[in-house]
Amino acid sequence: MRKLLFILLSWAMWFPFYVHSDAPEPQAKIIGGIKSGTNEIPWQAYLNMTFGEGASERTFICGGVVISTDAVLTAAHCIRNGSETAKPENVRVWVGITSIFSAGSMNSVSVREIVLHPNYNSSRFANDIAILKLSSTLPDGALPIRLASADEQQRADQAFANGWVSDGERQPNLLVSGWGSTDANDSSSGATRLQQTVLSGVPDNICNSMWGRNINSSEAGIFLCAGSVSPTLGRDSCFGDSGGPLVWQDPLAAADSDFGLRLVGLVSFGEGCAGRLPGVYSEVAGQTTWLEGEIGPGFLNQATPEFDVDPFTANYDGAGDAVEGVQSVASGGGNSSGGGGNIGIGSLLLLSVVIGFRRGVVS
Ligand code: ARG
Image (cartoon, rainbow, N blue to C red; front, side, top):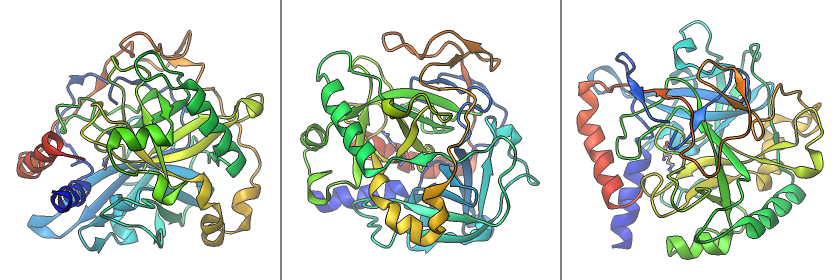
């Protein structure tokens, strides 16, 4: 059974999200999210990976995170298709955009090198992190976000422990964003406009017992779990959000020009979406030594970025205008519908595989 689960797990991970192509149709939210404002999430990257050739060519989408002027982080599983690792020329990266209609052939930033985490384990999703080293400079609208320090991660864990309520309203202390599925029951759904939602950090021990396996304890500090702000609200990341940012706000730095926003995780895996189990993210605070070695010492000494808005206190309507208050914790979430997308017929076969996994085990 365990073996089967892992086989299913690894298969599911090959299909982050199949790119949709047809005209958009109205859909609900990320899962339970709201639209991001223009420049509200300037560290968000949009990724297209192409594997195979000719008739077997497949393109998948993932999220990514700008962490320096020349590096984007994503999930390792996003750039792998079975044993094949994507080549830099087959990974297209867009930053500084909120609508995928802005992702054109001329404005992607090129990747010169892809570095998988040396301890990435594709069957357990351990260290599900990869670095995309960029060869072009960041366009307007894109800004790096700082990683949480070890001390900040410790305080975040404390906040998760204090803010967690098993059967009631929890503290909204994390923000996740992406263009992935907006409907937990429809893996072909996807947003054309970037979506974001607030989540609650799930303490490691609680995440372990909910999942019924040691997500955290065997290798402390490489996984981080996040769930909905209330058991009755379906909020989560989903297919196609992988590799994207999970952000915590350090209250001690909230007055800084970056509002104390810190990258704590990358979307990695879950059981379906917005179900009974929390989503699991690759924790990044413990990866700074590896990242510094790859990106260079300047990476940890960057000037504090200047962000326009604090996404934990701002909220946007569909037109991208700020409206009052953060995303409600009590209500269904958004105040506008996101754009959805259709999937090409050729992918139906693949999708049914994905849907099968989602019903059965994990995605
Ligand atoms: N593996 C999915 C992807 O590749 C992300 C799944 C996240 N699932 C969740 N329930 N949070 O896009």
